[in-house]
Structures are given as structure tokens and as C-alpha cells.
Image (cartoon, rainbow, N blue to C red; front, side, top):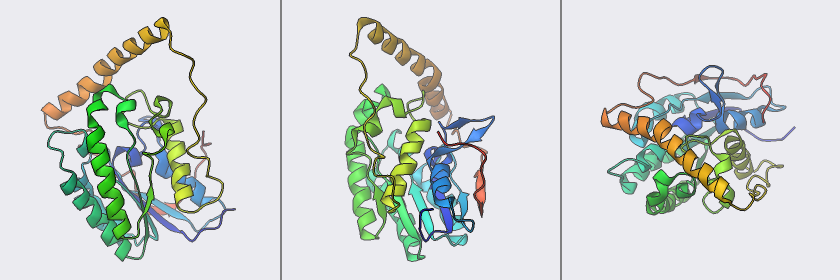
Length: 265
């Protein structure tokens, strides 16, 4: 059993925290926050967990819709992960985005909860769509680290670790982590919170074989399939002013004991 002081964990955020990319709409989505709850619950029958995250939400919506419900649950541990949906949209404003994040960090820290957040990896190594986003990522990460330091917030800083932009950790949509990526994030957050046994969370994966003409062709074909299957629908929703989170509510709005019959992979 791992010793820790947490009994009331609340996760707020967008699709990454909801768990998109780790599961499906039929059987449900797990994600790194669920996996972290699994780690924290081991040997702690008093442990409870709520996940207020909803896919498609920008940072201002997360602050407006999830902060007060999170505070009302009186957590002793909160994770705040926001900014991805702002990062990939026109009109990116790092100062405004981190201003909203900092308000959440400050108020949650003032409540007495232990608060933790996550930086962003080099998304351009995962998706061709995000290759021009590196300046935004660097700006957002620098501001996020500074805001976290001002309020004593723990930071899982994924950007310096090359494995976090290894495409094998990401789902086919290249926007969300896959099961292995979510597992690494959960382990990284456990390490950030001081839990033993997770120092290897950022270890690199085995090297890939050298590229060949056949593998290059497969990569090109995969890029085309991705553009048709994921980029196109995403752009169409943006043009229509729609979001993948429209009409959705939190999957786990109340603090309840963590119970699972699913084996982590």
C-alpha cells in the first residue's frame, strides 16, 4: 500500500482529463485521471474521486462551469488541466488563457487542497496539424509554470521528456493520448505527488526501426486518413460553431469511492 494523505480527489479539465483516447463511447473512457485515482485508491478504502471534465471545453468554460462545483466538493487533491482547446484555435491569447488557469489554481490552493497541473508536450512531433504551434506551446508552458510557482501548485512538466511526444503514446486522432499515454501521465502525476514506484514514467520506448520507402508510404497514407477522418470533422465543427462537448455533462460529478473491475494496461 502506498501511503498518502488524499481522500477526496477532484479532476477538472477537458477531453484529456475526461479520458478520450483511452476507451470508447460504448464501454466508457478511462483516461489518466481515472488511472491516477486507481493508484491513489489502492489500500485506501476511504478514498473518493470525482471527474468534472468535459471534452471540447476551452479554459474560460472550464473556469466558469467546473471551478465552483469542484470547490463545493471540498477536495484535498485537485488536478487542473486546461488550454489544449484554446491552443489549437485562432485567436490564441496565452495571457488570457493562463489568467483563467491561474484563477482556478489560486482559488483551489486557497481552499487548502493540494493542486497539480500539467504542461504540454511538443505537439508538432505528434500531429502535422500542430507543427506551427510550438511557439504557442512554449509560451503557454512558461506562463503556466510561473503561475503554478506563485501558488505552490505541483507541475507535471512533460515538455522536457521526449517520450511524451512519441506518437506511440497518442491515439489515432493525434489530439488525445492513447491508453499508453494516459497510463504514463497517471504515473507521472503520481511521481509528481511524491508517490514511490513511478520514477520511470518518462522512460523512452524502444527505438523504432529505421524508415524505409514502404514505411514512408504508410506514414503518408496514415496522414491522409487522419486528415479525412479527424481533421476534417474537427474543422467542420469549428466552422459551425459547434463543440464535441455540446450537451455533455461530467461523467463523475460527485465524490464516490473508486471501484473498478477493469485491469489497467
